[in-house]
Image 1 (cartoon, one colour):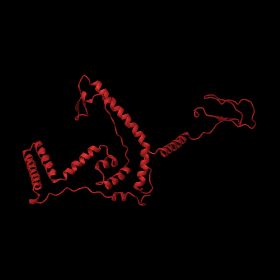
Image 2 (image 1 turned 135 degrees about the horizontal axis):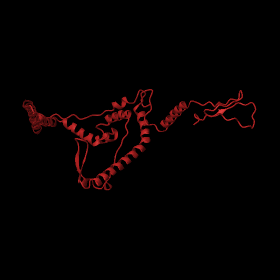
Image 3 (image 1 turned 90 degrees about the horizontal axis):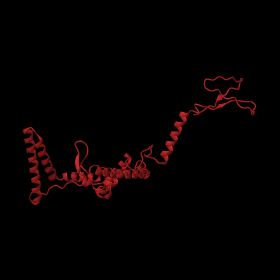
Image 4 (image 1 turned 180 degrees about the vertical axis):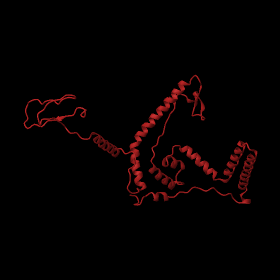
Length: 282
């Protein structure tokens, strides 16, 4: 507005009560005495002023409620990073809780709409193309009768490295479920624990041989070439024979010697020592 209708100044040696001659409008010409010409009041650079104001505002917002750890001039210690990220998590937790509540209500609303829209059909298909499954509307029931909860987590690369070192130091000393869910904070703790149990089971040579025999047999069934299928079946039989020999050896350990025990995971605090930084805990 001030750019379209700027303010003007006119110098005068003696102030009087006489009205000031108005400034001519666009397209008009006015005569003035020499030295009485109205001059626009100088203004600052509005664009530069806006940029400075925006930078100052963002700086104050970041200092009041930072969304990410600050940049360090020297490598920080694990304790320093953990403390800073913990403070940030306290600021972000309220927003995360609000998003969780909103997502829970949205899921409840989607289930309620699905139940009402599919009352006549009896079944509804859910999932993407190639992964659709049919569910009975009666199985969903009234969403007001059960609890729907959603869990959201904020992540930071620096704190993830610290958490990995903490998990390595506590591995074998604390329950796996506690470490995976509360320290590593994975998205699907139950799924990760299931995969870990499967991986531990594969350390047993008997289970590994049996799984390999089943996998080779299933792969042989899908082969169209008879020679390749026969080769896979032969490998499967060899693995199956290995499995039988291991089981027989365990049933009679005195005759052939005990079976090797699977290796157990160990832990140490070396990872935490490395993350203490060049200056120790500071």
